[in-house]
Image (cartoon, rainbow, N blue to C red; front, side):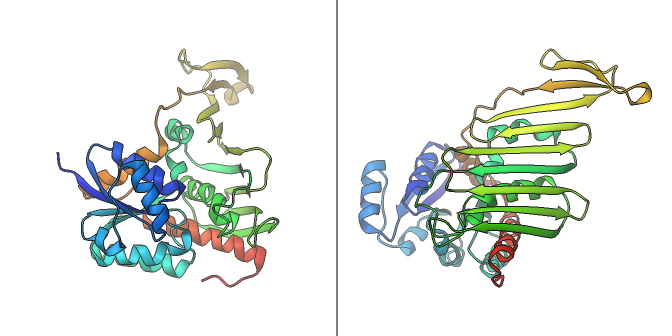
Length: 329
């Protein structure tokens, strides 16, 4: 089997998870890990039984691809160095902290014909994956992503830390440009926005109302999607998805569907059916890293490309600008 030689940069919480997942992927070989924090690097190396390197350059000389799980502010410089060594890159979300940096990475990856995949892990959540065939043309989307406070991630606003997950999903579902953004939010326990709400208006008339907070008592990660003749509810914590759909009155209803009878009269009669698809048994992180490895080996486009990461970042930065009034860069 042709195996991809992979390394991980960053040995914090996410970096350790990446390391464990790569060790379980058959068509890749985990060559080593690196972190600028030598004590943390040594501990992770011993704990996970993985070779460590003394510098980024040493690791880059040994690998075909790198997974960047370092702090967001370090993403750009690390990814740029990876490209200089001709190495493919998986980079955790958000792609970078600024639009200019993201644009440069996208440009370099295209010029060097190197894959750049952004770690928007919720694209691979079982709830979303199980409902893929039912997404048509969303008209209204409501998302709520609430988390308990954790110092990890507070180097950026909650918009870049949490909300960007939902922004990315929404942009993948609504095939239209964002034409207007209204937003508000506040910093409560950190130097950056800790809670934010945004209303996105699309050129095709679709609307998305997005809320994110990292100072909630309880976790909540839900998305509700309304489109013609259907309502879809996704729970990203449990991985459970539900669908209510209107189908023709003479449509055959499979045993997996529950019929609630008919609504409307005459030609407008429809049958209301409910479905809760069988939950997909998959590890979202392992799945997205597996797809990254496959895309490099098969020379195909990543599922969540650098362009996708850039689009999500642009919308996120507009939201931050609307709240803080800062210049977008």
